[in-house]
Image (cartoon, rainbow, N blue to C red):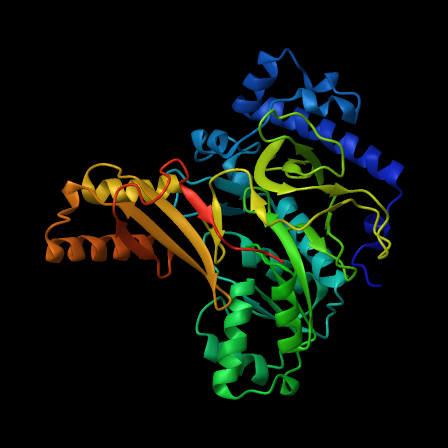
Amino acid sequence: MTYYNEQIECMDKEILSQVQLEGLQATLNRAYKNVRHYRKLFREIDFMPEDLTSMDMLPRLPLLTRRDLSANYPYDMFAVPLREVVRLHTASFNFEEPVVTGFTGNDMSNWAELTARNLAGIGVTRDDVVQIALTFGIMSGPFGIQLGAEKIGASVIPISAGKLREQVKIMRDFKTSVLVSTPTVALGLIRSMDELGVDPNGLTLKCGIFGAEPWGEQTRQKIESSFYITATDTYGLTEIFGPGVAWECPAKKGLHIAEDHFIAEIIDPETCEVLPHGQEGELVITTIGKEAFPLIRFRTGDLTRIDNTPCECGRTHCRISRIFKRCDDVVVVRGTSITPEQIGRILTGISGFEPRFQMVVDRQEDRDQLMVVIEAADQYFFDEMKKQRRFVENLHRQISEFVGWEVNVRLVEPGTFDPNRRVVDNRTFK
């Protein structure tokens, strides 16, 4: 079993609890002093940071949502002056009011350690070549992996996503030993290997880390058997760090939360009541190490459960179950988070009003597909086929450009679908 920082990863639970309490107290003080939003919330409930004397008091504090972050766009949630921020990212460049996150130099160092733990946990060393097939851009994902790999001393290929046939050649010629990508990209690489006649036995791959979208055991088995590797899951949010929040160890029995940096809770998404460990609910995370952008009781929207039973890997930090579902209308398709509100704004921009529509997600030939089904109305020239076709083509082009890949668009007769169900996700993650 390998660790990057065994002393912390296998820390005694009582000591870890004390680390969390001290980190939480420091975070609350920093947030109250420097962030108007938190100061207002705390005053509304007559709470001062020094009032918190035990972890049991955390549920007294208000929950934080993405709407709160957007309302304070761009910098009002920062707890340090902008001159101390060395990196800026956003949760999604598609939002009309994106959430901007900041990192101090210490934040970047902590992020590097967290992703180094992720990589070292599956056996990555300075002798490895890590191919990062994630899209480099304004979102944080691949940058954290690069930081961690470089901290370990491994060689990094920051190849980004796309151009799968070229990626296969680089994987073979550069002797890649670790692949980091979305499951969708990994399955695309497998198809490209078949097309190119590349024998996986001729590769030097030994393991892979796959995340940014839900994937099940059948997908894991296909990736492992096709590449002859061990495939593990990873979890992160751009609002917090990106990758590095939680990761699978070789036991593959859940993802370890880095509890020296994050406090995890599970709540009932309807009542917001804190649920006992072991019950499924919405994951809520509080950061206790971030300087620039502290988050206190942040609602992730992801459904999971916390497991505190001992793990055979020896790590003492709790685990969360793999995440396949959300408690809101956000769908994650091919690593992209999409909401009905975003699609609705595109439809309104084209037609002048928001029609009834439904987002339908399916999986075909190991690839996620999104279809936007729109209820036809007189405004769509339903009786003039040429105008209707141009209208659908325009919708198809704009929605596809918005998400970054091909989306199907279909007009249907009124009554074809339930307008109250704006998202239908037909995927299964077995």
